[in-house]
Amino acid sequence: MRRYLCTFLLLFIAGCGTHYPGYSNRSPYIAVSSHTKKTIGQTNLTYPYQNRPTLDAHDPIAKAESDEQTKLYLEGVANDLQEVEDNADNAAEKIKAMTDAFNADLPYLTVTHVGPVFASNAKSNSLDYPEFPDFNYFPPVQPHKPVYFDDEATLKSYNDDIRNYNKQVTDFNATVKAYIQDARHYIQNCENDYQQIRRKSLKLRTHIRTSKLHARR
Image 1 (cartoon, one colour):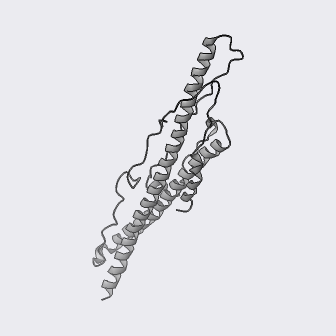
Image 2 (tube, one colour; image 1 turned 45 degrees about the horizontal axis):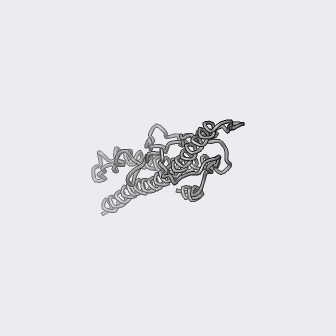
Image 3 (cartoon, rainbow, N blue to C red; image 1 turned 90 degrees about the vertical axis):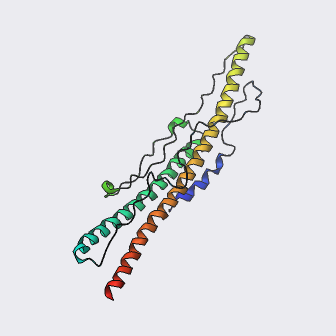
């Protein structure tokens, strides 16, 4: 994977976000993230990757068919490896789009949909590798400060709004952190899947070389 390590930039999250003081004294609050982890285990594959085709180079009748199966399998492997790599890069781009908006102090509603990047000519034979989701969480809206505090009830209401807003900010920051952690796990799984698919291809190549050596004897 060429660019997945760029996610190290996301370490800025520690300490991100600003609490609005208003007239409120905040009490300690434990953040609750809204993001549910989308990736589990060590792979993103829905099903185990297909095994190499069973080939018998000693059978002259089946040789032509075996050659075609080998060609299609290796072409599919190359296509699948590219799809996994592109999806890892796509996940990194999604995180970058979100963090750029965060660092620029822009409203999170300006975060654009990155979308899929895989556009191989062999898409019909693609792996249909699961894509990491966009950042679809909206930031809390800062409460409007009254122009005048004419009575105790107005002041109390505003203080309550500020306390609630600060809790929402804390939760939102926890959601950002959870999203990034999940994306980094997804990208690590992409690396695992990439290596697994590559090993399947190497096993086929080894089998072909071994069969050719036996055929010459």
